Amino acid sequence: MHFTRPKPFLFDPSESLTMSTTTVSTATATRAEHSPLAWTPQPTGFIHDVLTVAIRELRPLIREPFTLVFGMMQPLFFLGLFGPLLVRTSGLGEAATLQWFVPGIIVMSVLFGTSTTGANLLQDITTGAHERMLVTPLSRSSLVVGRALKEIVPVIGQAVIIVAVSTPFGFEPHAASLLGIVLLAVFGVGLGALSYALAMVAGDNPYVFWMVQQSVLFPLLLLSGMLLPLDDAPGWMTVLADLNPLTYLVDAERALFAGNAGADALYGAIASAVMAGIGLGVAVKGINKEAR
Image (cartoon, rainbow, N blue to C red):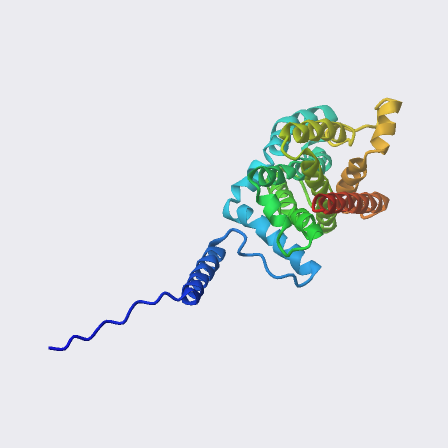
């Protein structure tokens, strides 16, 4: 009988390395496909990056549109509970009072909604998602510009809801109201960007964010003539109201929703553009400084 001697098993390190590399590469690619950051593209331009970030930020809103209504609960309460009191004290009648009051409530929804958006960035900072975003191929400035531009959608949505709720009670929007919504969107972008900048400064300390946000929000609200006219206000309050950019936006919205595109609309457009420029400038400078 003849036995064939088996060939000895030879370990080739190069084959093992090749197999390991292939396995690791396959596993990495599989994980990348399911990674939360898998949507991140290779950098192809600032506008593309901004749109990518904006779409990413809009996905939670699309999945849970109820948050759009929840964010405007306070303006709706003011409309339903404060509005009837104003009708009785104004002596103008319900329709005329609503024509004056509803634009202010729409601005209030923008104020409440966009000034709190930095809380979303606070959550990303706490979970480490913001730090991971900083190392993606996206440009640093697009991370805040895209987030800020996302605010256009909820601003328009809230304005449409408030108009729809108020119309059956005598409120009458005009064609110029569309320009008013554009001004709201521009102002909301700037205020939202400032909110993100505040969140970056607050970092891991959310109490700082909420303390500053609340301390700024209510003086802006009360000094804008949003709830009550400031015609008979003390002199010092009138001076502060003139320095408040929200005052010009409220006046512009009342004029445009009444169909008057005059000087008030022009001043409101200037105030909105200045707010957008300052907000985006501060936010971009903050994130560029943070990324160094």
